[in-house]
Length: 251
Image 1 (cartoon, rainbow, N blue to C red):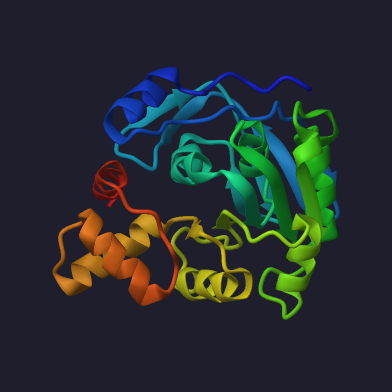
Image 2: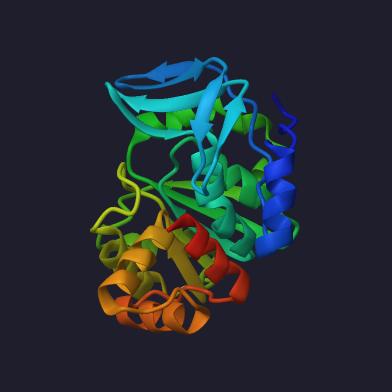
């Protein structure tokens, strides 16, 4: 389980690179695991819809469940919705929410990344993700620090700065919600930004949150609108023409 899988969906990866300037990323080799109410299970071949338009046939996928609720998976939708945030990972990265450890794994493989600090409040999630994703055998496991803490807790800054050696994060990625583009996500992420003062930040599903804002304000989904949206919500979202195009295609 030490070697990561090659880039899933290579044709999709190449198309994303050409259009947006970023693509997909390697994922761990998963196996079934269960700890308490949390479990990771394998599902066989089937068609799946992407975060971007279009469906693909996946040979398999693994899904993280809490009871009967699916929290995360290795499907194309998840890969594409994480892609921009993996591309932004550099220096010291803080990720709120371990999930299936897919983001932490991808960030750790980037040569630009020095350390990945994962904030996860549930010990059972840490245990099941570690077993399912084979975290102990990752090629760059030495870069990854898992902190058991609440990403919205009053001691967040203290716990994270202890793990970073006092260094301000270069990128914060927040992924603590079961619902994509949850209504609470922008505000929760802004709270983390105020606590940690990262140089740049984003959250899972922010493209849809931005699209909703543009619709409500009659704005085209362009870099200038993204900058205005980021200022309004209080999250330093990086803006570029390629990422604006990705937001438009997703929305």
